Length: 368
Image (cartoon, rainbow, N blue to C red; front, side):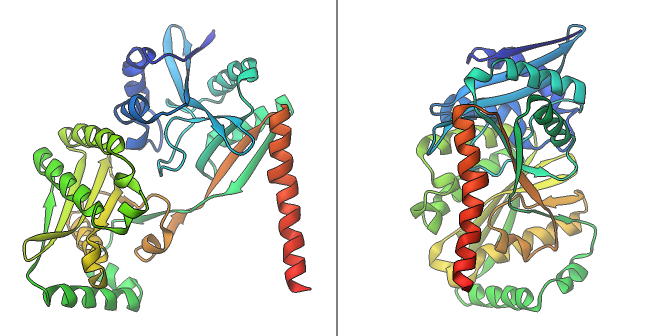
């Protein structure tokens, strides 16, 4: 017998922790962004007006799946959207369910959500890669409930297989990138001695995080409130998470200095055999010398020499900067499961009927 229930209170976080961590180890393609450590901290400090909806699926008294979801209001129609926990604008490779993939159990969870459909109008999941078994289950469930399932092209997720010697890898990159790296080093060396430091120890990673935050304050990201420049509360949340990851020896930082002054820094998390590039910032005063690009090259060279990880995952977003380092990426989609509520019909009509028609009309008008 399959038993499903929904947890909606803040007190439920501690009740599901052990199940969450056990199931995360069984989940294919899991990343640090689906960890209990990150999402529990994010929820208690950054959730805003979102409401908690964690679906628990068990058989024979054992929890087999968790669906960590949140209920959000999406403008302009105030569409009530169920989505994986976390900020939709974060690059976090979300998953619908934690645990071994099981279509029957996932369908049971979706049926429970359908029984509670008075609460929501749509289900949204970003960065879904073709062939993901969750997509097939959602498609079948949409047919059964006579709902819409729409797939919208989303950003690619670049990655690099770390199996090539550095010199051979560098020769495979564009002549322009190779030239820019040489120019960046000459530019910085003209201003002072250039050094780069890799930091793996927990205390050193936390020290590097302080440097990274300081560099954010001296970069374009501060003016645009990007990443660690969002708010004091976001930085506090992120610091707690980095501390956990560094204590687990799953965090690494790099700091680039010119005459002893930090001018660029990166922060990465790693899990199993994958290295995730998470943060980078540089001092705007040194922008003409491209210190961030040079530090990325130093980091990549070290990874190829170290030969510890199989994959460098650049995550999505800022694609021009990332695609210069790799020619491989996963195309992804944003999935919309839309039920035929009043808001759902309005949303589907506006975004998947009227908007494409308007786009085609404008294209014809431009060529007329």
